[in-house]
Structure formats: structure tokens, C-alpha cells
Length: 119
Length: 111
Picture 1 (cartoon, each protein chain N blue to C red):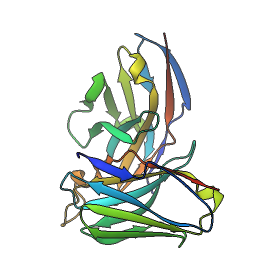
Picture 2 (picture 1 turned 60 degrees about the vertical axis):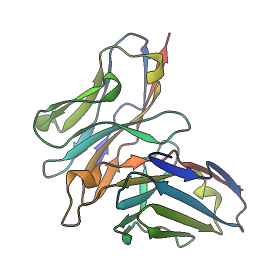
Picture 3 (picture 1 turned 90 degrees about the vertical axis):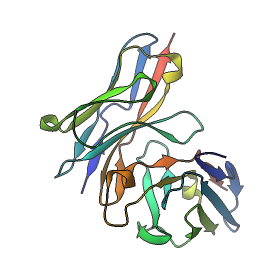
């Protein structure tokens, strides 16, 4: 595997289900991101993990719960979602500088996304 | 806070014709700027980036972009489009550990 992979690629879930999205990066990066992409809207940054610590949580509802067990893996746990949560969920990674933002921090590489449909 | 505007929601261009996609940003300092492309059903692929130096940057797939500080713009160009360039294109500006994306421009290529 190369780059950033995401599984599953498609997910249909009911509002009472619990599911998880998985992201794995094979680039040796130390920062990982979750984005939500809805039709005709800018990408919304949801969570940022740098050096396995969460550094950003953009007012995301608690029905979304991220987990970053190591620098290569990132999960997004989903429970009691709403139909408006249907979207493409994208994972990205980058090489963050531990001493402050450098250009490499912002050069993000994206996975193919998980298309989520909440019924 | 930084922001990005892509004024064109949809552009249709003939195969072999030139393409220019507009991007305007708002940011107080010298920005880091990016263009990404997203093909249907795929994630975003980095086309090119501007950090500093030469204001004309070359990217993959024959794309280039020019940073114009006076106009707060970072427009993307390609001299001759191919049918495979049909996709959605996103401009992004970086600051505070984050990328802020524009809403995207969809490019349709007609034969």
C-alpha cells in the first residue's frame, strides 16, 4: 500500500448504528486530519492530530469521535448520526514540524475518502 | 482569519484550449498557497504549491500557477487541456496549522 488509504470506501448506516472509519498513511508522516466534504461547500476541517495528540477540534458534534492510536492510523467513530452528516469524509496526513509550523506541515496528502450515507 | 474565494463555480473548456482558474485569498502575511484536484470518486491530489521565491510555480500534469501579491491571487493555468483534466479544482491557503479551502471549480472538457 502506498500513500493514504481509507476504509470502507462506501458506508450506509442508520441513525442508531455505530460504525468506524479507518485511515492509514504509509508516508511516514506525523500529523493526520479528518475533513468533511459536502456538495458545493468548502472542505470542513474536523480534527487534527499532531504527534498523536489532538490539536484541533473544530466544534464537531460529539457523535463524531476521533482516535489516533499511533502516527500511522486514524479512526473516526460514528454513533447516532443525522441525515445531514451524509458526506464524503476525507483523511489526510502531513509532516508536522515539532518546533512550529513549517511549509511541510501544510503539504497534506489525502486518501480517497469514505462516502457516508445516513438513512 | 484566512479565507479563499474561487469565483467560478463551473467552467467548460474545449479539449486543446487553454484553461485558467481563479483564486483569491485573504491573509495578512505571506501565504502558503496550494492547488488540489479531485477526480470523481477520489480524494484530493496536490497539483502545486507556493511557499516563497519565484512567483510562477510549476506543478504536475502540465499545470502552473502565478502568485500575485498585489491582487491577492493565485490563478491556475494550463495551456492545452486534455479530456482527463475534467475534475474539480480546489485552491487552499495555509495558516495556523490549517488549510482553508475554496468551494471549488468544476471543469468540464468538451471534445
